[in-house]
Length: 111
Ligand SMILES: CC(C)(COP(=O)(O)OP(=O)(O)OC[C@H]1O[C@@H](n2cnc3c(N)ncnc32)[C@H](O)[C@@H]1OP(=O)(O)O)[C@@H](O)C(=O)NCCC(=O)NCCS
Image (cartoon, rainbow, N blue to C red):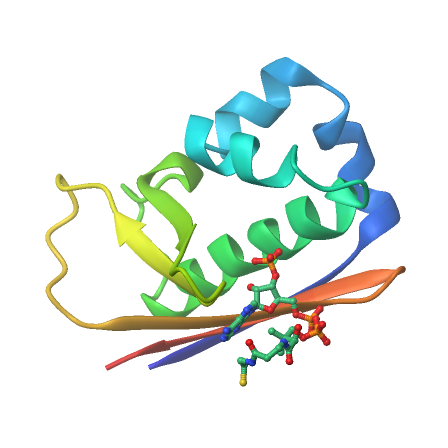
C-alpha cells in the first residue's frame, strides 16, 4: 500500500503559528525537532505531509489521529514512523520527506 501528499508551505503557517492547533497535530518530540530549525515551516509542512501520506497508505482508518502518527529520525536523519501502541497495525511503515522553500511532500509505503 502506498500514500502520498504535497502541500504549499504557506498553507501550514496558520497551524504552525497557533500553539493550540499545532499541539493537536504534532507531538512534543516533533515540535522539539522542528523548533531546532530556522526554516521550521518547511519541516512542519513535511511532517504534516508525512502524516497524511501514512493515513492514505493505511486506507484512512477512522480511529487514526494525527497524534497517533509520530515522525522521528534515526541518527543519520532518516525519518521513520512510530504509531501509537493502541493502533493495531503490524506492517512495516516506510516514509520519505522532501521540502523546498515553497512546497513539501512525503511518500509512505506500508509493507
Ligand atoms: C539527507 C539529504 C538527502 C536531504 O536532501 P535535501 O535535498 O537536502 O533535502 P530534502 O528537502 O529533499 O529532504 C529533507 C528530508 O530528508 C529526510 N532525510 C534526512 N536525512 C535522511 C537520510 N539519511 N535518509 C533518508 N532521508 C533523510 C528528512 O526527512 C528531511 O526532512 P525533515 O528533517 O523535515 O524530516 C541530503 O541532505 C544529503 O544528501 N545529506 C548527506 C548524505 C546523506 O546523509 N545521505 C543519506 C540519504 S541517501
